[in-house]
Structure formats: structure tokens, C-alpha cells
Image (tube, protein in one colour):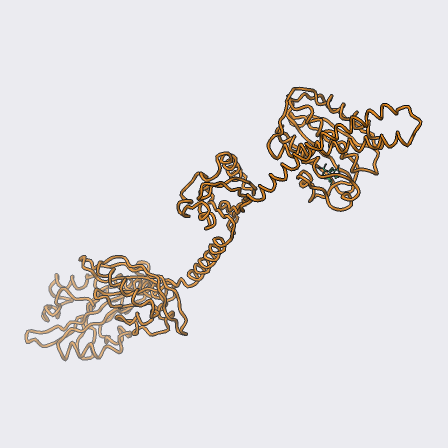
Length: 619
Ligand code: ADP
């Protein structure tokens, strides 16, 4: 509403009577006023005078003698009220926000508030009416914008996934948005005051209200998760947060807050919690050791088995960064294995001794694999292990037995061999062919037996860490030539062809490398019965001497290729029955090459032959 600052009833009739001829000051104020003005007389409100600004509104060039209802037809329903108020009651009449099509700033409309004031003579009798217009376009437009924004905000609030609420300084709800009404299925009025609490699940009600009351009294931010009952009796998890609000003068006005439906988040959290709990229970019950690390190499989990074994609490274990319970002899190896695995993120196996709560060490065999998030981000490692002390002990007993048995067998075999060779020499020129053949066969079998016993002794040496090397610098080509001659001497079925691409000196145990070469050559012959030759190559590979023995025999299936270097491993199937052997030769060869810090590998295809290679640093 616009209040007039000046009272137009002050205008005297004798002055207004003479407007067109009278006092120049007043009449020019009237005619030149930027406010639209017009004067009317008689109960029909006939226009008697007007200014230029008024013609813009009425759109009549000359308004004189035209009744108000024709000048401003938009007012037709109001004219009677206006004229009656002014002429009969001698009061001012108002008409607000008269819209006029005319450009005004950015708007195509201009709005005016009209004030109709009575003009009175000296007897206080109403003789006329003065219309004054006030341009209120800016105010109207501002109000319109505010109204539009309010409506937009309202529709946003009502359609938002978040519900809003307001509480007054007494702690009573004064507003909840439509989203809340939709969630609860109850009308607005039901939630006012403390009514909203009825929508909170009964079990949560006290907790929600007490926390609210406490925070409210302290005028502190209020955060809480609770459940509400939906329209069909179903429960929803809600997270609410409220902040105290204040009047401009700083006095406490209550709270304003929002609620979010977190049902699905809670469900996922619960499922996660459940599965975590299940995992923990399984992990604790399983008679295996479980250890987890994060991507930063920090231990994050040990299971109960581990804690019980070491006599430490899980927290103590997690906070112990160093593997101090691991036997000092294995600490460095375990640390290096872990560091390497973190760098390359590959799985690995390890065996180490772990100190129990009784101070005694037990052997643990552990497999460790990298963990990844569903998005493929590296999360750390999980290790699981078993107490393998008994296996280790059995193995040790077995190794000791193998060592002892092969040692005990070696003495009589050596003496038998000496006698057989003596007899062979003695009967070399004898006519008894049967005797000569028998002695040759016995000699061959004794050689085989000797090799087997030597291999078994080597296995026992490897297992007990007693395989020592006597390194010297020698030319590998010469050694290979010697091995080729020796093997060729005993095998007449295959030609062995030595291909040399360069000469290589190495610093190694000559006899042990000879053992490796001989083993690869004899295997090449043994596993290619239908072929008549094998090739052996020597060449430079990245500064190393690389030796490959290539045969054209039965070959090895891809999935077996790595296993052939394992102790006592023999490929199952045809060759098991056809070819004699114990599955020791390649294991010993691989250990010898490993001890020389070299590399050994096989490239093969079933039924197409194999290439067994090793590489050693040349000196
Ligand atoms: P052995 O030959 O006494 O069984 P090895 O340790 O020398 O023991 O070899 C292990 C296994 O690897 C053999 O049993 C055989 O199955 C396979 N193997 C070794 N060399 C070859 C080869 N050149 N071709 C095909 N298979 C081979």
C-alpha cells in the first residue's frame, strides 16, 4: 500500500477553479507534474482538467468532459465505489496496481497506484475529485520477482529428495516440507508442535527426542539417524541435521534443518557389516593364519588364530609394524619378499618360522595374494598360512633318511663297480660272449645306480643347505664339448650337434655345470626316442652365456612346463611307464643354476620337442 505524503485536500477550490487561467505556480505544478493528475466534478465524475502525464495513461488526447468510467474503462467496476467514497463520504479512495501497456524499463507494462482525493470548498463541501497516479512499476516488478522466486523455491522444496523443517524457539515444529509429508503419509497439521515424533519408530523416539532436547538447550547443531514409519507401515532410515537460527537482533529463533532418506545406504551398510562379521567369524574360527595389509604396507588385520598363537592382542599385532615374531633368520627374506610383492603386486608363497606365546617357533607356510577393489584399485595384500611344522619335520626325517641311505649305498656300489670293471678288463679278450655281455650290462646298470645315488645325495645336500660350490673361471664351450663327447660315447642312437656362437668364460663350479649340461643332454636323448639327433647351442644373450639343448621328442604340455623343475615331479601319462627316472635331475639342475644366480627355463610343445635352456653371467 502506498501512503501519500501530501494531503491533496489542501488544494483550495478557488485555486483549482482557476487552473487554466489562475495562479501560474499552482497550475504549472499541476500541468508539468510527472505524476498523472486529473480533476473530476459531479457524481458522474466528469473530467474537467488533466495534465500530460495523465494522457499517457488514459490514451485520450483530450479528456475533458469525458466521464472517469470511459477514460479508464479498466476501473469500470470500481468507479461507483470511488465516486461514492469521495463525493458522498468526503474520503480518499484508492485503486492499486493499475496496469498500463507502455514500455517501462525492461517491462512492457507500467503499474500505477491511484489516489482519488476530495476537493472541498470553504464550507468543507466536496466540489470535485483529484486523481493522482503514482508509478509503482518497480515495486510491482520486484514483488512479482519475489513471488516467482518464492514459488520456485516452494516447488523445489516440495519436490526435493530432501525434506526441510523448521522449529521455533519453543522447540515446536512450525514447518515441514511436502517431501516429509510424502514419506510419512500424514497431513501437515499432524506434524506441527511435537506431532512429528509420532512418525518416528517407537524404539527410536526417546533417543531422537532426548538428543534433540539436549542439542536444542545448548543451541548446538543437531545430527541424528533414526527410523520413521512410512504410509504403509514400512520403515525408512532418515538422517537429519539441524542448525540453530537467529533473528537479526541475535535472539534465538529456533532451528532449521533437513532430512535425507538413507534407507538404501543403511541397508548396504548393514549388508557390509553382516558380511564383514561373517568373514571375521570364519577367519577367527579357521585353523589358519590370516593377515591383511593395506596399500601402504600397514597391517590392518590379523585373525584370532594368529593372536592366540602369538599370545598378543589383535590391536597389538596391528600396531607392530615390524614382523618381530618372525624368526631372525627369515625376517630379511620375508621383508624382501613383501617389498618386492608390493612393487609388482603379484602373489607369492613363503615359509618362515613364527614365535608362539610359549617362545617356541613353528613353521608357517603362507600364500599371499593382492587385493583389488571392484574398480580395480590395489588395496593391499591378504595372506593365509598354515602350521607346516610337522610336514617340515617329516621332510627333514625323509631328507636325513635319503642322505643316509644314499651314503650307505654308495660304499658297496663303489666296491661292486670296481670289481665289475676289474672283471671286464680281465675277460676283455675272452671267447665267452655271454659272460662279456653280462658284465657290460651289470656295468651299465651300476652306472645308472651310481647316478641315481649321486642325485639323491645332491637332493639331500640341497634340502639341508649343504650343496657347496667350488667356483673357478673356465671356458663354457670347452666344458660343453667334453660333456657332448661323454654323452655321445654312451649313446649311439642320436647325433649331438654343438652350435657355437661365440666363446664364453664363466666363473662357476665346473663339475656342477657339467652335471647340468649332461642331464639336459641325456634327457634330450631319453625323451626323443623316435628322433636321431639333438642340438646344443651357445650364444650371447644380453651379456650372458645362454645354453639351449634342443630335442625333437615327446615335448611337454604348457601346464606341466614349470612343474618339471619340482622335486620328484614327472609328467604323468605315456612317458611315466616308457621312460625310467625319478624326477630329480631337473630339480638338481635348477638348484645348481639358481645357486649360480642364473636362470633356467623350458620352451616346449607337446609332440614337437623341447628346448631346455640356462643362462649364466659370463666373466
Ligand atoms: P626324470 O627324467 O628322471 O624323470 P627329470 O627331473 O630329469 O627326471 O625330469 C623331470 C620330468 O620332466 C621327466 O619325468 C619328464 O616328464 C620331463 N622331461 C624332462 N626332460 C624332458 C624332455 N627333454 N622332453 C620331454 N620331457 C622331459
